Amino acid sequence: MRNYDSEVVHIVYACDDRFAEILGVSLVSLYRNNPDLREIKVYILDAGIKEENRRKLLSICKACQRKSMTFIHAKNIKEKLSMDVAADRGSLSQYARLFVSSDLPKGLGRVLYLDCDVLVRQSIKELWNLGLEGKTIGALMDAFSKNYRRNLGLEDNDVMFNSGVMLIDLDQWKKNKIEEKIRDFVVSGNGKIQQGDQGALNAVLSRDTYCFEPRFNSVTIFYDFTYREMMRYRRPPEFYPKEQVAKAVEEPVLVHFTTSFLSRRPWVKGCTHRYAGEWMKYKEMSPWKQEPLWEDHRPKWKQEGIRIYKMLPDCLAIRAAGLLQAYGRPFLYKMKRKLWETYQYIKDEKKGLRGWISVKSEP
Image (cartoon, rainbow, N blue to C red):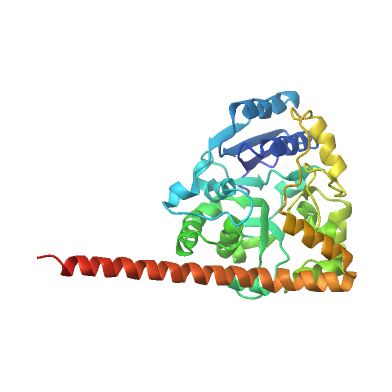
């Protein structure tokens, strides 16, 4: 039995002040390309958006003749768990999405979570009404090697997904106590999780995910590489067929400007992404149209690495990058985790020894 209204879409974003502009462009594209939806309700998990940017975001609703959005104070993951938590990539504000079941208004049966860097190109009505086949979420199967899975305690063929677009059955989420399981996983890893919040989501929801077509989350890697190059670079145990990825490139419903070592994002000077021009079109419709594009602040060593990569023959470049991506990065994470555990062990042993000496020295 359907637990949601097919014509009333509930959208969730998580955002801090730095990314408010990027969120604004996503909102403009969402509203402009969905005139067929009776109502679009937007909830923003607010991780410190300043008043000026709040007013700008609210003005988008008015300009597009949509109901006002709802700002919800985002839970601080460090305060929530009383421990230090590493972002791994991106901002800690992304951890706010882990608590959607307790932060959103009661009675919602389904929500669509979108990262701020998602461009909406077509109606999301089809995505909103997808059947999840009994799973808790729908998401894009991501192309990661077996080593990433092992670091999260998963089997080699378990699903890994991109959490930037998630269709969430909130009733299932609550029934299966997903929030509690994620919290326990983060605590068990001392806040040091491979890929941060996305890693935690994958660890808990891998076998409870319906993998929708890639056109609903067309990520940057689809544009940086040919299909064959992508498979060599990422080395996933399984992935979508070539035809589905090609359709995601040619006819994407949602374009997700994920980070990539080979390319810049549309709000950064020099971006050559296929849909960068479309992103700029919606920026021109936003309250941030006068704001300059960002500078490329990637470290010099990364920029030098890209320059060397582009100098190499394609076959050699892909092979070298693939070794680093599929084996190097997960190995480094594993070593960092072991060093951290060793440090904690020594720290605890010293603490115990000091306590023992203190007790022994009492008269």
